[in-house]
Image (cartoon, rainbow, N blue to C red; front, side, top):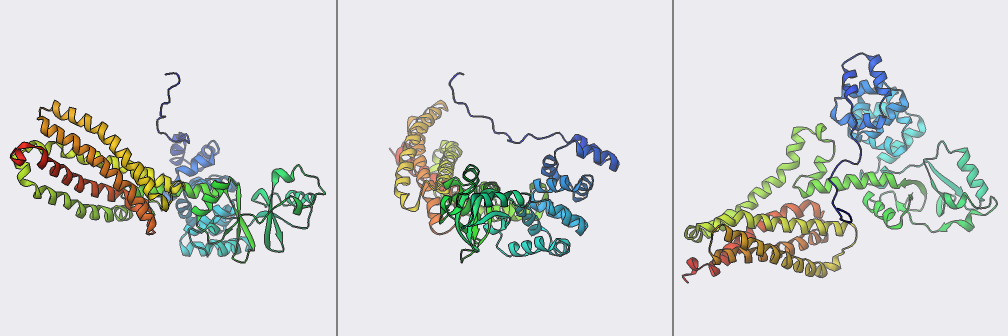
Length: 465
């Protein structure tokens, strides 16, 4: 269909490799496993660690040289990599960590069990041990956990030639070189992009080329806030400073992307009534049954209790249902339509809130837009519902009741779905945690009440007309 915009089938952006040769090699001797490991990309092997036992992962690590083994662990989930690293000899573990960027090293060390971490840290070089102790002291969501102290910096009184010489001399140690951070002593005073310094005259003064008073984040800044700054300003890296302005490191866009993707995954779980803070800690196969139950039981119990409101509504209209049994035929249709409409609105508004497209002061504008959307959708779906009811052989009064109820329920569901996420954010609650489950419960009970109330006024058998 030329010119048509068709939605692509949802699929993994990363091709899933065939690791059958690795599975077979794990059943054989060490020589065969070493050969098989050399034929596969370390990232492919590392991503597969979450499906394997710690013993199998250790065998794969031991079958590779330290650089490839470190690359495997970098590609694995930090919690999985921590379990594998904790089972290794501390000296071996410290060698593997030496091949990793600082942020990966800290993420994995932070997930290692306390007793194993102490043994591994004792085997680390003094500088890496000090970095780990300092960075692990920050909260798990702080941007300081993601930063690297190994950055390209120069004094404000220096020249471009001196800055480039510094980069050449220590290029193997500098982890963030997209920007040169300009300091006055320890204080951050400016930033100069590599692309500008690379074409500037060697004797040009850094102070004349730098951007003064650059945007920076504190060590305690939340990762999500730092990601929003990088996305808004299209930065490649972001300097990290202490409260008194001392430059301590920088965080790269790819590091914050990992954090952002993790947050998105947690949000998906929350919207499904699963505690993302529990379920997203480790990969699926590494999550114990206890944690699986713990992540799901809270909302299931709350929704179970809340759904008793539906039973209460049905009991209140028991006489009406007994007089016109056909009323019950359309209950699943109406409840499902309302829940689907509300869920679409909730998802749309949560996304707009996350992107900063909607703010608290926009609540009336959002409400007006979603009410009109609900009305239009309700008219279209109501007409379809009327026709479907007539095909089932019911009378015009019941078919009209179903059509009008669809209109009312869609409008109501869109209204509630617009308000809940904004209200949740207003009181400091993550909208993804409460919006999905709450919209389902509210629309089920209220939609049923609206349906049976409308039926009392429209169906002759119920009002004696």
